[in-house]
Length: 72
Image (cartoon, rainbow, N blue to C red):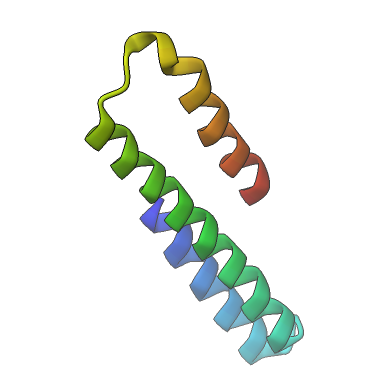
């Protein structure tokens, strides 16, 4: 997750500096990607702190998949 966020930030800066993309749009995209990284990390923290029962795996899988889909 941290690698994806760092990569998104570096890519947005590179595209913005070289003129390959509008700097504002590059910053927006990077911010959305970093938001998805933060959501994944928050889900991890909440999951480990709550120690949900094994029967709740579908709910957690759905949440992680939702964030991954938004990120994609």
